[in-house]
Length: 431
Ligand code: AMP
Ligand code: GLY
Image (cartoon, rainbow, N blue to C red):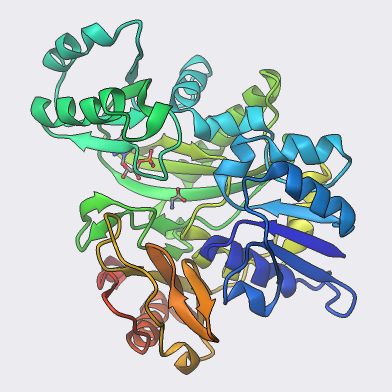
């Protein structure tokens, strides 16, 4: 079987590893290709020199190389319609169509979809050119803090929590007038700030039926104790199910997952692939209520790095079952393990940072730890840094989170590159 993985970060490295180790992946007769690879992924997959957003070239490649199954990691190719293009050419692919991807690629679509289908989310108001002149009056009429979200994709940076009017006006000027995220900020959402704790839930679905993977928690801020700028994610742990009681777990399925899938289908945007539900669990009297903070149309990064190692059943077949509408026949089995991921980033990230520094210590990693490559590349047989988030170091234990955390921190301390930065408090509250 020939597999093509689109995307080349830590998430895609994890997906490649889990496919490579799936019992149904016959290593002697099968091959994985990856656009555009990285030194970690290249150990198990052949790199392909086509960018993730070059849909036509990928389509030609898939036909020429007789690709049996394609898996899309990042949101951009999904938003460009790669799934529609492959499906129209009878090529099997994992992921949602362009119209279903809007659940992530347009915050306005996503919020309006939740509102009309009574899916719990923070109350909000949409602004665009038709009512932009009213934004100042609106800001004067509401209680702070508030959350401002650019409508379109902004590489995880389009969300801002404003504590006062000056902050809010400055961010709105940046996104709407100075177009720091291009046209993504021409429309934006202002929403109520919710207080609680967050969990990330991956739902693998064929559009109707679904399997819920172990919950995870993501650490979005750059600084310790959740301070500073938002990033793509500085660490994660899984399973996070223990954070959520049974009644709340039931509500997540009944009030969020089921109506989302049912109504996406009814609105002609059947969602297949991985629906990522970013949830805020809010205390309400003696009970907890789950609210959707965001939907993503793909696996999250770095949650994937901690969630996928927990899956015991055949991962490749899970993804194929989604594409073939056979999720109900798939038996999901989960290992009784604890995993914790720490992201090693380039100093300065998520702002300006330098790359091109040699990475050392990768060979000293023990068996209980996996290092997934995010922003790396090869130069003269050395691994060098090539992005903001460089490596995802994952500790895995069958004993406890404490153990998984110790493994991850011990391993990351043996790795180094110039200006390397990582948070020292990932999972500290677990212990
Ligand atoms: P998003 O990109 O929508 O996931 O937002 C990034 C982060 O901003 C989330 O993970 C939350 O920590 C925070 N956030 C977004 N929306 C809200 C909200 N309505 N209330 C509180 N925090 C939020
Ligand atoms: N870790 C959050 C995301 O992938 O968007």
